[in-house]
Image 1 (spheres, rainbow, N blue to C red):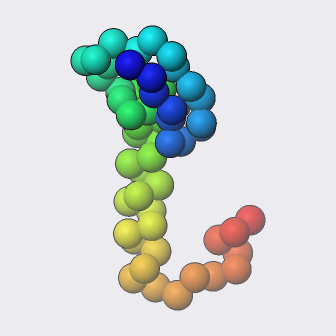
Image 2: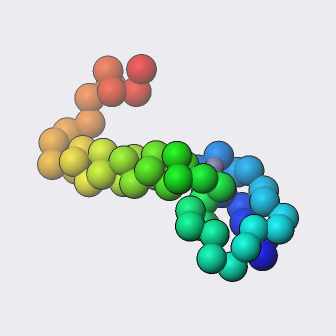
Length: 54
Ligand SMILES: [Zn+2]
């Protein structure tokens, strides 16, 4: 199957159906996405500070 990683946009043309990290290219990207999601969930509890963007 074809995978387009939501984290880094890498394309894997021939990933196996049971590829453990899908829809990501690797467990690294999977964990990065999860940590981003957790960060976003945390941020909504307080105002966004401009220094966060740096
Ligand atoms: Zn990736």
